[in-house]
View 1 (cartoon, helix red, strand yellow):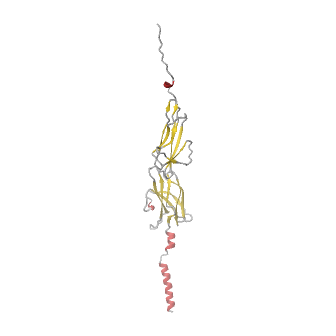
View 2 (tube, one colour):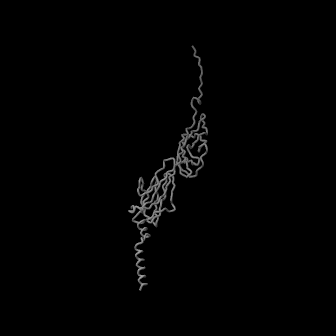
View 3 (cartoon, helix red, strand yellow):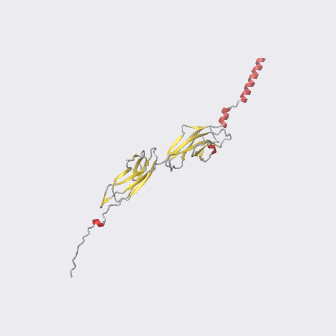
Length: 253
């Protein structure tokens, strides 16, 4: 009789403890979603380029969404959204939320620009202690800042010298260049010579010519510059080419 009583009390205590101990595993999955990084934690791109994709791993599922918000500086709590710019909302697929073809502002500065993109839950969870987020850093590279300078070939009488040139100014030692006269580039670049001259020994042809030059940074970003040479044909000034004869004529009386 006592053994049965003891067994009954043990079963009762077990169910009581089971009821009192929080069952957090399922509750957390439903009430406190997760957002973490995939293998992607940072992206680097040239200014003007479209970011192919940004993604986070999450347990959030429909009707809740993941929102990506861009900031200029790191955030302690991105849910505050202070100066944040929404990039859009996502629905996860197989636990991954992916946004594609994302434009970023042009980088007009001389140095690289870093943005901080946070993935947050939308709508915002009511529990302030359960607002997960993941951070992706996006670096937009600065373009090369080089410019072009050109010099027309000089003339000796009606003959053009082969001393015209096109030069790159303000480039970095690691920059490279490519020249095109028809606006088509192959992508094959070369180190910029020490004197900066990328087209040399030009003569006047009588026909104007535009030189397009791409200057590539070490990362591969480029800026395209162009300069036009008029190439006006050399001509001999009349005072030098037409002989002038002065003859004294005696006038009779």
